[in-house]
Image (cartoon, rainbow, N blue to C red):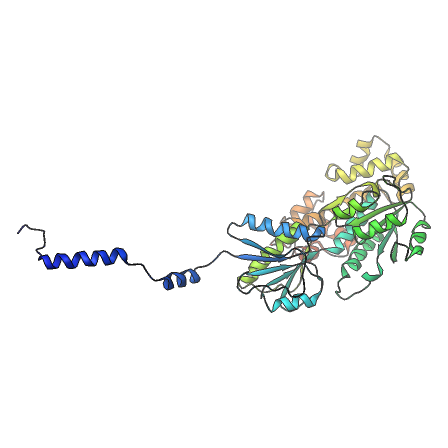
Length: 435
């Protein structure tokens, strides 16, 4: 017998062949495999219910999609692009969280029984266990007023519909918040501001009359592009002819309302995509066990889109008009009024007199207002420290920014950031205490 081999009988060889055939024909049962699959972690899924027939709904949906694209493996499940429909159900265990755009709190309460982790993007009423990521409607009003002030308007008006009169976090509370921000910014700049409630259609002919009776020109902000279109139509403006006395500004930058309007509607553009992105991120944090935030995450608006409805300027003085444009477009180029005077090539005293006559304000005040507006944008949209922001917008130290910011807005920079950017890790970082 050779070393290293095993002696076996023919019978043993037959048994080995049978075992080999059985091994080749053997298939593991499906039950253990299925059990293993069920035990494996699946990709996170975000359910979405939005009304895609409105601009904000489409933007929120795009924001959730952008989040999924930035986080490979995260899936979007569009449960409804028509908003909530009676009888709509969220299949259990198919989504980890739900992003819901719906103003009726009863809908969120009903869906909470089907999905434990819900983020609402359009309702201001606090609900137990429901998180919220919302427009900063007060900042929308601020941006609207600031837009008109920068174009030289000193008589301003805000219009909201009768149905938007509910308070206490109701479905139209956003309009009241926008009006509040508009009035606060206008009064802080020394402008005269008027508020109206009514439908700018045949049902309320007195509204249009009241607006036209104001000493013009008048910068009019409405609570939405829909109401801006109603107002434009009520004025009977022929296509492409701009009103001479009223400049009209809406909110939402809604493509449908612009297509239906006799003239293009200038509009404050909310950051809808960012709302969707933040809502997706928050929903998955909740699914991983994080608590529901006590207050909503507020998202500041992006910009004002200018179209025909505000193509007039309120100023007849071309020098003051040019100065305002420079201040608005190149704020950081002018550390003080002397730099502005040098660019305009006009005596400082002459510029001061012309500003006082046209605006009732000074070049220095307008520069300060532009800096505060820029600081608000940076506080809401970046992780820069207060100290960094102070230097970027032209202040020599954070305390000076804090003092001027509170005087103009009624709150400190840290308070503003905590309200509109609660997820920020830089609340006051890099600045002095109490800023």
